[in-house]
Amino acid sequence: MDRVLGLLKVRVQRGINLAVRDVRSSDPYVIVRLGSQKVKTGVVKRNLNPEWNELLTLCVYDPNDLVKLAVYDRDRFSLDDKMGDAEFDVGPLVEAARTAKQLAEFPSGTVIKTVKPNSQNCYSEESHVMWRDGKVHQEMFLRLRNVECGEVEVQLEWVDVTAASWRLSKS
Image (cartoon, rainbow, N blue to C red; front, side):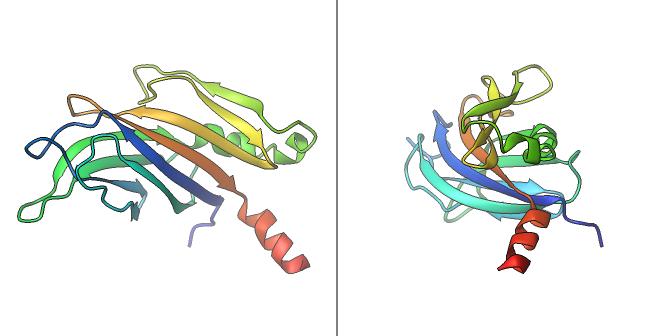
């Protein structure tokens, strides 16, 4: 079995200006995939600017794997409609987490790395990997693809499983 590098806490915060898939609105939810893992948010009824604020957790085995996010409209009597998708790289977050021991001396809120939007990623604006409250975080706004409009705000937090297991064994 592959070794877990760490846990990726994904807070799916909100959707912005999502596409209409029902008569006047949509009932959106988000599915997040990493490798064979799949987690999803709850459904927010009749809302194109939903607030999920849900924390989902994934195991990271390979820092080169892309996290894939897809938004769907829940339909009661037919297949759910896709409302767009996006993907992002956890590499910058993992890379920053590897230097966490050195980061402990920095003040909370220190920007470690900035990822700029380009044609190769789904960022709608700059994303900052930060040292905050003793942890490595990243906040991002992802522009949805394969749809006429919409963005999703996501916040990431890295949990180093070796440090977590060490803390557990010490208590």
